[in-house]
Image 1: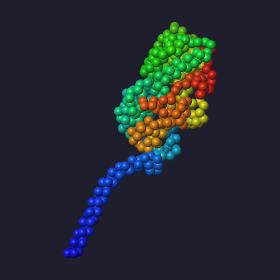
Image 2 (image 1 turned 60 degrees about the horizontal axis):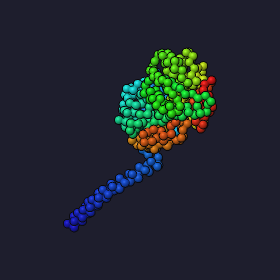
Image 3 (image 1 turned 30 degrees about the horizontal axis):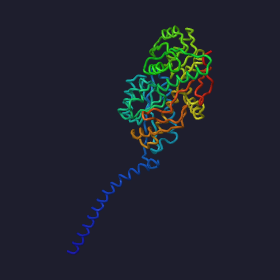
Image 4 (image 1 turned 180 degrees about the horizontal axis):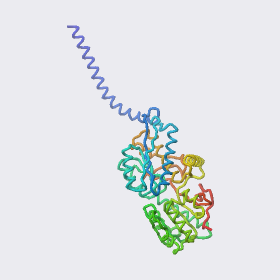
Length: 426
């Protein structure tokens, strides 16, 4: 009987002990919640404790077919080069060396196709998207990404509205239309101030999508403040097979300056048309022109492009790093790195940097890391890349380029200048 009583007491003590442990567990649960926050902070500070992820997939949305395929392929190649560099260096280190996989998507330069490709990339599980080159694609594509809460880093697409709709997942590297237009007007004022010949009249000839129309509208609205009278605003379809009506209109107006925004094909057609019709304005200046800063136009149209200017984004001509990247790109793809490709390469670096700092494949954490971007090791002519509350790169700026003997040179601002401007054209 004593033995039975002793065993009963031992069992009660054991049960009591379990209950005490359960109570402690409850207490520890609270403690664990607190510790989780500390662990998370420790994880971020010590990559060795980060979760291991086999691969991280990002999307690249570009016009890989259609009329803009050449530019789109250049940009996709640049993104692939940036991805390959990260993988060669050991992948995303904060995720245990996760390999980065680029999921290429073809917008064909069409808005609806861009939207359906964003939906596909969402199903594929990408953690971020890069693109798009055409503003008409960027607007709906970023809207679709916003719905799916996918961080979208826009490399090239100019219209202001891309970052002015209150979106949380859209970030843009290049200068928007209003900066492009303001840079153009300030450079015109500077050129007139430094020249003995003042140019005062202009015709705006531009492709008629939101890309060309938005820039032309901003210039037209503010040109008088820079002493420029706009004689005519001439929109045309970028796909036009014939530029003769535009050329004839410019010829009849006889402006000092032809200001033009368009793509490679139509921009080249316009210059050929002016040349063939013997129209000789005192200056031809592109604004975000897809032809005048394109290596194909610069190197293959030397007989008609001498002294043409372009207010545009470009590669930092005074950066040793930029020269190394350009050489590597040329060796890998057997062609010069375009400004478009340089921006795509940089956008990919910015997204990959955010994934590394997020130490997570979670889209929201990557978005949060993008908001904290302070990226200075880049190849663009600007200060560090930082985003404001709208997602716009606050230090983005356009430079003034001018073509001399089959090569584009920066003629302003002075920090990046490699040649003196020729203005007016001889």
